[in-house]
Length: 301
Image (cartoon, rainbow, N blue to C red; front, side, top):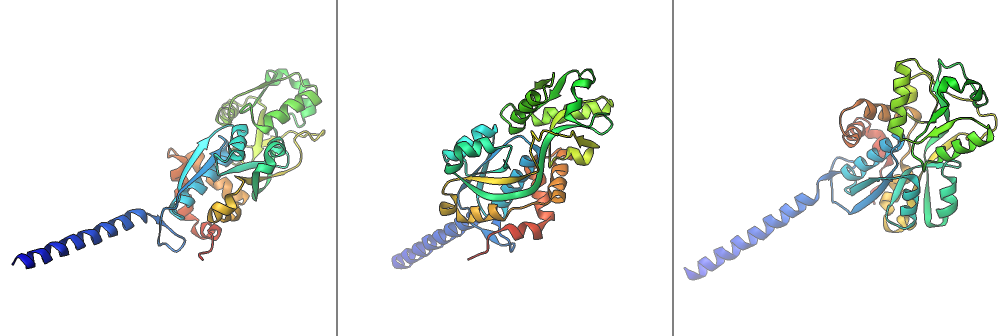
């Protein structure tokens, strides 16, 4: 009987270890891959994001895919462009999906380029400049001084470290504008734009496309005869040096990640119109556009 009791005890201990192992496996497999199966968590990916509509949309979508489809734990940190490029160069962030090239973020690429990886464009045809509602009877930057009182002598800007702010400072100098550039943020700029449009008042803001405001309001870029704001740009995914070697799967996904004007505009609009957190909206968009999303995922080895 003593021998039988020992055998039973050993069997119970063995079953307990098996169940524990199964439980650990199930807990680690909580993300779906491109075929709808489970994928194991693989580590942390750190993304930098500027508080701009297109960057918020793309970064949250990338975060949703990396977590839900690929099994990574993602941390997204909002910061100024200069800090993001510095952090990428120092290896503190892994990637940034909102690099405007070749003009807006040229100074950062000139400074840190040899410490970064350019993973290619994720959106084509981006543009920056000064934007007014279409009902405003001003079509060129050269006309602003003659209409200073109409705009209270001010241009509503965004974050002080943004490339578009540097370009606007240059535009003020080159066009000899008697205007003050007001620092704020992307959300504050769009809020003032919306308020002015509601009251049918004139306003001039630092603007860029892609942005949901162009889908919601009838706007126009002011002509820029001196070419201060440059030609159309592309949005690039900029990563830290070495990401292709130590995170090849993540790097391949980020290289594959590309959105059209309609796709990005739809996602930005969904986020702007929702009371939910951007990540939750991005997850819904991901599930509604599964074929596109799956086309970005690395091929299984």
